[in-house]
Image (cartoon, rainbow, N blue to C red):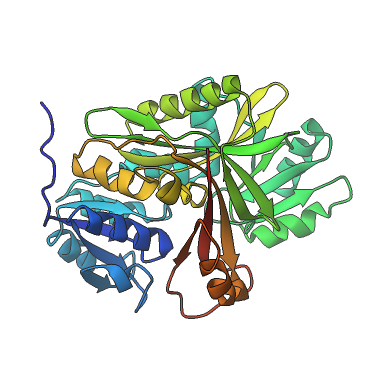
Length: 357
């Protein structure tokens, strides 16, 4: 039986008030759907473009229950939502992506284990709880590796690059009791992400792989098409489809991979729309944000084919002040997030430059 699609006028609840929620709300509005934001901040980027906002903590179960009573479906713009909060929402309304997908992506050890059990390559990884377990793991990785907290952390936060000269006791002290995972270094040629969508009927669509370039652990720019062979592109699409199906996923899923001489290695997954997919808004008929709204609302998935080549550049910190210069450039789309304070490294907006294929 085909699920009934949400008709225009229905309300999508979005947990999180950042720029991803903002762009989801804008995409929903184009389809005639309303959005209700749940976040702890006043005047959040998403709230500025949404119909309603509930301001409360993410663990305020009563506020979450009241929020759920006023929406038709719930989604989220970030993955670090307490499990109890998801349970309260799911008790009365559909929540997409599911609690399973959320749980897998919230813990890096669980994520790596899940992916590897599907026969998909990941970096060698080790569960770290003490200085001793870290020292033992480093013996298997040649003394080098990336130590990461198992939960939370993004844009390089909660990560330490280790070498034989590292003071392991000091690094473990910085963990402050948080469980961690050590990942072996991967010798890669480039990083490529795949944005995949799966709808309520199990239909899957993928965008062409996108190449990512980082500076200081923060995504600086993304390029479409990625400079990879057709065979690598097909492999990336296949593993993305496999992961989406294995998670019984609904919505947009983002997979970051390393291109190596031996094939693709998955770095991490994100159960949401993703920074690397921002360029799809301007380079494709249906971008990742509208695709996510379509998927969770029971609408047919849209066309993912790119009509243009594209380069997306993040505007970080004070670079937001260059908005007029970017706006004056030809074939350039400017997206500003409405954040009140520019901080070093903070994502304040992005621009997408298009070029004919």
